[in-house]
Length: 258
Ligand code: PGA
Image (cartoon, rainbow, N blue to C red):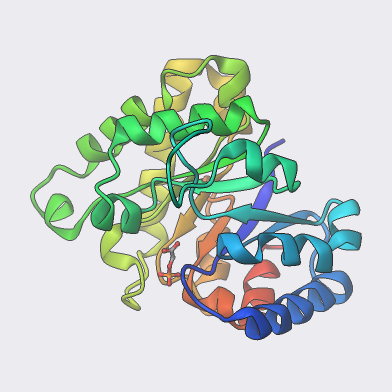
């Protein structure tokens, strides 16, 4: 059966001391209070990945906690100043990496072809990509919603062989809901999650479609998470703002129906 996952995307927030404090709080709470069948992933800035892994080694060993990055290079190595490779992340024992976040697509012109290449790099290094897809408000309102999602999935992911595709996590993040306080309704989210699963089924078959975790992201809070996570095709969340407070993040982790 597919995994339930709650991943925190810290974006470009926290300095070293603040990151350390938040991680200590999260690991303490996860250890003592979190529902144990949920995989918790924290994706801090690259520069804090090592600290996160050190601080949460016990929880990582118990398989309830993992550390991820927020991006990765399309290249494997070489003269690419400022870039971080999948092999570097692997050698630090990171396990996940967000790819194709709408902020990368918008501010760094990341294309579906880049997403496909990054996913390839991560899988070659045995990291799990968390691949973000989602439409803008304009695309939703002009009726292009399903086409946009289909193209992102097709071009970003469907070049993969089935054995590789099994390691992918998908995050549906409507761009209009990210950081805006406007969460998609559980019906709106479920409709797209179901659609994404149907695309996977058409391409890779029922069994694989059933085993892929699809997360929701976009202003997800302790208030909205329980209804979202109760939907049949929503397997957790990619959490931005609310992952920066240990209490809220834990409440979201514990939002699955018992
Ligand atoms: P948000 O961000 O929860 O702050 O809307 C989610 C994301 O961008 O991954």
